[in-house]
Length: 175
Image 1 (tube, rainbow, N blue to C red):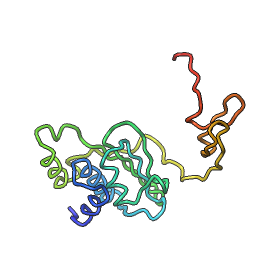
Image 2 (image 1 turned 180 degrees about the vertical axis):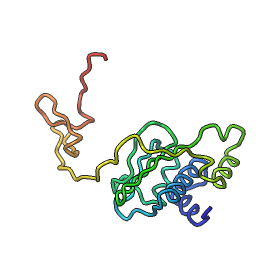
Image 3 (image 1 turned 90 degrees about the vertical axis):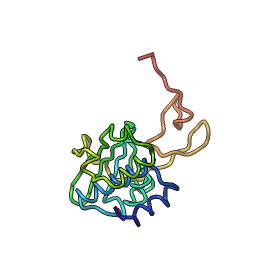
């Protein structure tokens, strides 16, 4: 384990925990199996299936961020990360094998994760979805109800007015 990289992830996240260790090891797995490193722009894309501590390790070590558009949240709740390399087309989904921590307390689990080989704690497969398109810039529109702006792809048309998601009244007939 690279102690300097772990310390960088801890400094970004704020404390040591098993969740951060999961993201740290997912980072290690992606680097090992795909030959990737820090993403200067959007060459490396990570689609995270959770919004837990491990995502911070991905941000700190790969420089995949929401702001750059190369960290995308796909809410399945799974401890899984899909990595894409736009430069060479390589892709890999890394998913934590469940049940390995049943008899371990938090500290034992964290230490186990950090010292285990990535092949021992993760399954590896191809993502079941396509590489997301690069980030795009959208025109900002003004909501005709609250007066706040939002990008055009997030706006709705309601009663002939452009409205933001907060002001939009959804219509449903029950199914």
